[in-house]
Length: 158
Image 1 (spheres, rainbow, N blue to C red):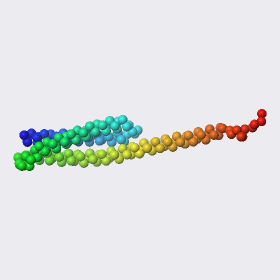
Image 2 (image 1 turned 90 degrees about the vertical axis):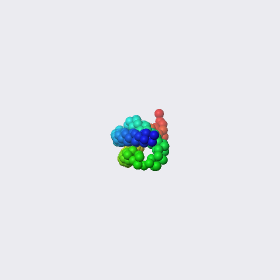
Image 3 (image 1 turned 135 degrees about the horizontal axis):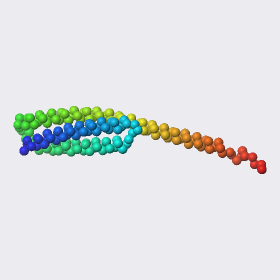
Image 4 (image 1 turned 30 degrees about the vertical axis):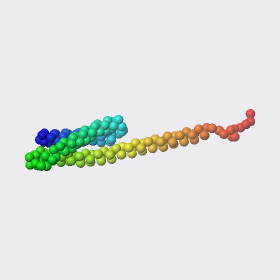
């Protein structure tokens, strides 16, 4: 029975590696979406939703791995030699997952910086539009005052 659980755990780790690869690909698309000008919020949101689904899948795999490990932990600790090959394989997969996790974390930092730059650009554009609108309003009100002639300056003679 323990052999089957260890096989399930190994498969879970392999699936986790696959999901991490897919997250890495989505991160690349997220970076492209955040650097593309003009910024397309719908495309960025679609990428983020896909990434959210992958993260949920990753969490589900982690929970399953942990609960399965709890079932076999005692047996594996009692007879480590019997399960040595499976444990070594899982350790190798865990190392790969950690390496991919570190890579994804670096991508996340780059994506965050890119998104902050995109937001700053949008804020700057909005400020410029606001200033332009304000200047235009002041100009038109000044011009309209020039065309108005105060009644006291009008000749009252008929």
